[in-house]
Image (cartoon, rainbow, N blue to C red; front, side, top):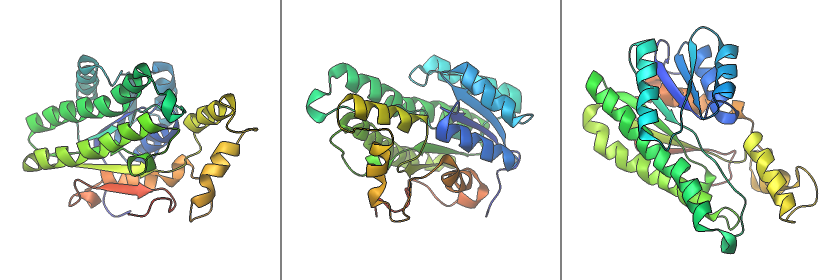
Length: 259
């Protein structure tokens, strides 16, 4: 890989499972010191224990500003500084467009969009105080580029991630803080297993894996992805190899959405 994350202090939210856990593992394999953060501290602790020495676990609700500040303080206390912040925590829900409620909207938007705003602001405060710049990396989605009728509120939240990424890149460039996003497509994780169950509960599919297989038919590379397919890009974005990149959203979807 071009560039290095060796010795960098990095937080990954939503790292107790799925893409976040694999991002944390790959960063650690490449020499980073990683804080595995998740609302589920048991899951985060398991991932950190699996990684070993260069990892710690922390509990965070990304919608809570005080909790996010505490997460950053814990990381700085352990590793001396904060170099990279991954705002990765996210949730989804399968729901027909006409059935999305206000509660559905607020739950998704609070975690996926407000959580990115708070995480970006608080990471930037720490990086500004250090005076040596930094990197903020947000998890978008193919749903940040296309509106899908069964995921309208999720799509809105991921469009918001792209907007926040661009706005923050412009706001923070003078402090040598870069802000980018990556956009996975169909990734076989616990989240997709949840969506698969919801498809069946809504009567939209008849059998397990039907939803993920049908959603994957338009992927040019010919298969859905695993978290390991994502980490080449995420580790690059955290590394010195991405120092001249900011304000961009990188599609990592096997060729579903071409931009």
